[in-house]
Each structure stands twice: as C-alpha cells, then as structure tokens.
Length: 485
Picture 1: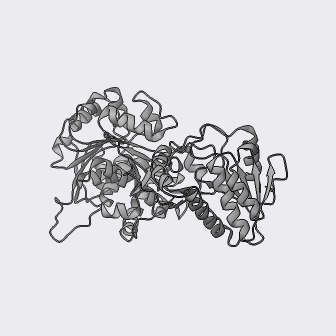
Picture 2: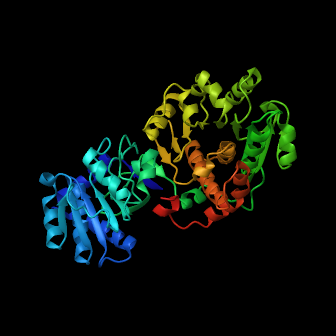
C-alpha cells in the first residue's frame, strides 16, 4: 500500500533528519530529484528554456536549487521572484553562480518562450488561492508552450485535503518529496496535480492513516480458488435489487457479483424474471431475503424503490448478523432512520455519492476524506464516498483513496456494478473497509479497460471484469504508478 500523508506528518518526519544532517541536506536531495525529473521530461538540458516561479521560503528554494542544477547542464534558466526580499538566499546564490537569470514578476519572465515552467510559489503550508500577482503569472504560464511542473504540491492546492479555493497552478506533472500528500490524489487537487512523481529524501515515516492500494495489493486480496474449494467456500453473496418494472439494476448488480467470482450468487426480489433470464448461474427467488438461502453477505438497495415493502426488506437485511452493503434507494431509507445502521454489530458498507451523502445531514464539502471519516464514525459503518477519486473510510479512522477510474464511469448503472463487485468481496471474508477499497479499485480498472473502446455503458463494465481481474493477477510489486498516479 502507498501511504498518503498530511503536511504536518511530513514535517514531523523531517525534524529528526534536519537535526542530524548538515544544513540544507534535505533541500539538496529534493532539488536534485526535481531536476532529474525535469531532465527526463525535457529529454535534454542544453539549450532548453526553464522559467521558475519563485515565492518565499523553502518551496522557492527547492525551485532555485533545481534551476541551478539545470543551468549547470546547459539550460537557460530564469527565476521570477514574487517576493524578492524573502527569496531563499542560498538558492538565489546557487542559481546565479550557475549562470541563471533572475527577474521579478513585472519583468521579462520568459514564460512565452519557456519549455518548462517550475512552480515554486507556495509549498505544503499554503492555504487559500493564489494572490493576484501569482495568479496572473500562472495564467500566462498556462497559455504558453512550457510543461507545467509543480514543486511538491501545486500552488493553491491544499496539501491535506485537495481543496482548491481559488486560482491554482494547473500542473501537468508534480514532483513531491518524501511522501505522497493526500491533497494530490483527492478532491479538486487531483485534477491540478497531473502525473505525480515521488522523490525519496530519506524520511522515516510512520504508518499512514490514509492509504492507496496498488494493483498488486488488490491482487493479493482476491484469492483464486484452490483445489479444496467448492462453491460454498469461496463466498456466497445475496442481492436485493431492482423491481419487476425496472430490472436493470438487479441484472447489473448480480452480473457484477458473478464476475467478481464468489462461489455463488443468490437473488431475492421482484426482478427475479429479469435476473433469471440474464444470469442463469444465479439462484433466484421472488420472495423475501429470508427465502433466498444461506449467504455470507448482502447487497441491498439498487433500484429497489422506497415504498413500505422496500423498507421492510431493508430492515430485514440489516437485522441479520451478516455484512451488508447499502446502496442507492436503501441509502435514502437509511438516511431517514440512521439507527438502522448505528445499531448493527455486523459490518456495514454505505456507498453514497455526494447528494446521497448529504441526506445524512451534512454536505461533503472540500475535505472529502474528513467528511467520509466523520460519517463513518457517526454511523459505525464503512463509508465508500463515490467520486472522481473515491474515498473509503472506516469507523476507526483508517481511510483509502482510490487511484483508478475514468470520467466515463459517470453514467447510469455503474454504481450498481460497483455494489455487486464489493458485495462479492464482502462475502469472501475481506474486512469491510478493504472490500470497499478493493471493489473501488477493480471497478475503476474495469472502467478504464472498457473505455479503451470508446464511451462505455454499465454493462461494458461487467463484460470487462474477467480481463480486468486477469490483468490484476499479473500485476508487479507495488509502485506509485500501479495506482494510476
């Protein structure tokens, strides 16, 4: 797993090194790694034009020292100082000694000619949008030809939450130091970070409270059947979804559960005829959940409606001592009576999108991980908050941010597929938070694969699952790129 850290956690990990290494050692490590990535992106240094937007403090120092490295390799480097009186003195001296040029914001910035623009305006301690002089420079840079490279965190992006409350640097690449910051992979910050590269500067990091799974992590949690397995030992999942008038949700959810490869899928509900026709492998009953037979986890809610019968069925499922995934219409009913969830002793997974989340009494806001954690703690349930970077939070505070997916998943029925996948994983015995995180990862990978052929529909995800799982099983050991960073 890849740990995701806050700015405060990274600073705390830096303190022992700062106390035991010569002054400037960590900055030199960061700057060297940053310059190395820039050289890879440029393909060469000699003759290229690099403009560094430099603010006060260490973030600007990182950009200046990296600029000095590039200048010594033959790049034409210009540092644009936004606050000349507070620029990093040693970094400025190094850049000038290497032949770099220094100017101010209203001078010749070289942005219109730059092959690469370095964002060293504000570091991980920055809050709020960029101030007007910096925002104007960033706007000019974004309309120019240069590659946009952020130093540690794009300026204007909250390093902890990914919030972007105002103008920010729209990086194509972010080179981050020591640890992957949560704000680079969640919320709006994800869209501003571009491709993220992590530079090791020697930090001894504690175990993270927020994680991102790699393909290899997911493959390790999806055990293939062994010689002694039968259909009952690989997980039996029950699905309550759809209706006689709208069987699609039931068909998609049960199909996804089948393709996620538990030993057996059972269905109970009024969409029985549609499910039976689409998936003869499913054991179907038109009765209530108690009539379906033995299961090891339930999925309840997609397309089932919210009438009195539906409420009775939801209450019956939640009264069991089995893991339950609550989605769609069942979320609406659970939000009206949260004690249905709070009083459970067995694991529960809730899968809201933002509007469904708000029905529980509070908006998601700009801190998606924090919001999911708060609702999880309140209800005593795992919360899978769907979005561009889906967040999974457990009642104890552990969280995951999904690194897979595609905007093409924003179409009807894809949530039903996610519920089927995750319900099947619950039935195999995975802890509820891991099942939710693995389900989101697989769902996103299937979406990417399906979208290779053009715009996808939910049924394409179901059809893509076997190939997706095969690719995951072939995944190499964890790297940052395994998660789509």
